[in-house]
Image (cartoon, helix red, strand yellow):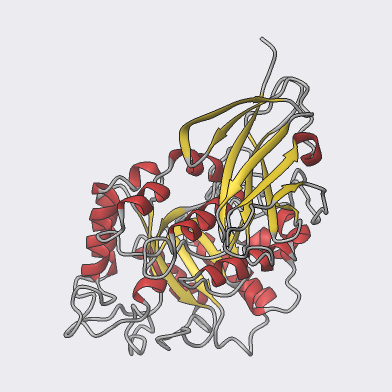
Length: 424
């Protein structure tokens, strides 16, 4: 039996959306003016420390040197993926007995982290490092920063670190609203510019985002991402339910972080891969990959290196988008972007998501239609529309009263740029 394709005509049921035109004063260290882009090992390589049995994949300087070379040779660095960040599991179990300093694991990082930083910098990349604000790190249970904030910040500066990810495990005795700002001040006092990535709000029931945005360049607000469609949509839902707060605190120098891009691993389908990178672009999220760059399939590499989607993510206006409508099993995600025309009308990146599960045909592609004016696209000179997954797919000029139609795979997305036009 064949199923007819359902056609939606959009009747807007708006999610709360703030276009982010009013920013809260934030940390001004001159960094992360657009969302950081780069690579971290954690979701792909976890805390694999057995280099005797798994020499290629263990958390070691060998892995990070190989990845640094691949970021350059495979063209990622040229597109903005500059930060190579070591996650948990890099330390010795204890600090140095005499100095109290953190120690890189002697067997897995025999050259030391200053030498590894030099290797990374020599390739035009930036060096990032994980730490924890509490007594020990989350997975490896290595030494945390508690009681050593300034010492650890100075150590990172000596090692030429460019980016610090500060987790929040084993910090029960700390007031996070004081501890995170204090560690940020310790970083600033070193005189070395380091992007400050905080896990601060994830560990609180009612985060004070105004305070967080003043002290962090980016912040984790949801659970760790996993290599699954369910995980990606969970994070999307978490953001959507809080976007009235999250959007207004994002902007140049301070970003909401929904965690890493899991494209190119084991479970994520091609459609779900498209979904994650599109929504992360709409959110103005950091694009931090976690994969094995040596084995990424060509079609996934093309998604990660899609210049048009990267341009949306890195848009100069720095306005975070969000969900504007949820008719039945569909979602409309919208972000104001450049260019703005002479009448002050924004262009927009618009992602249409088919969450699947519709009772008529849960696994069918769905056709979705809307009139531009229903999404407040009101430029009387119209919008030039292009398919962001295929830059050669120019769909023509649409006026506010025109109807736009798109067909979306189940658990997939379509993604378009509506460029605001001028009369010439």
